[in-house]
Figure 1 (tube, one colour):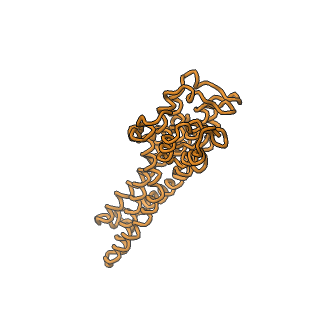
Figure 2 (cartoon, rainbow, N blue to C red; figure 1 turned 60 degrees about the vertical axis):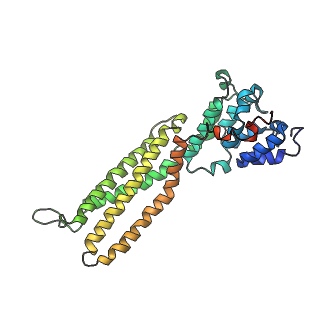
Figure 3 (tube, one colour; figure 1 turned 120 degrees about the vertical axis):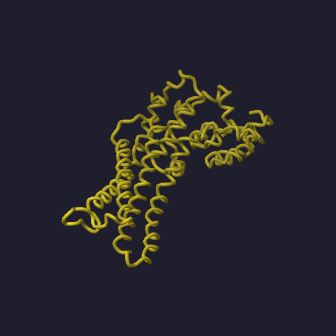
Length: 318
């Protein structure tokens, strides 16, 4: 531990692990010397913020790192600099806050690229005690996060394609033996079925192709920053549309076949139709929302809202 921590060391590092920047701000303002404290593993405040992926704490103390060369060049006992630490896999409790392996990898890359900006180009190529560069550390630590999310999405989409394709070639009500035209051709419900079944098939096929392109194409780690998240966003959107189209088409057939003389059945059919749509939205919508937020609303560069904090008010000299 640092020699001048005034008893603040333990709550300080716990606040960093929890991402509670308000507590960190208060402690650093009250006792500026705690910026040099170290935890039980020998990491200081800046290193701990990077290891625990505490972006709010990092944004709070960014100006200290940026303008103090000794902090930028600090290394641990294994000669890992700040980028090496950013290249390590985040703790499990941090990864658990993020939905899906692809989004986890994207967030890890955002951290890696952000911390890399602090060091000079020659410092970026430095190796640790194991003779590994920062890029090598990142690749080794994150190889198991690659392409996991798309596998489950692909299975779901393939099932939808199977269902809607089978429905498309099996004409409801049969066909006229002489003309070969569908018996229900003139019914509005049949038209709705045809349109939404086609919509579901085309959207599901597009979604599956996008997911398969992620699984089968060789991508570099940097592609997970923008390129692959965009494909996932578009693929998930197509998955939502295909699921909705499949349910609407099925409801149209139920109405056409069973509700001609029983109009009261329309209400329960519509109610039950909302159930699978609600389930897939509840499962996949959080992932879609997180992907959009992480891709288009980066977690760094939001330091203006921290200017009013005590550490940044000029009242404390670190």
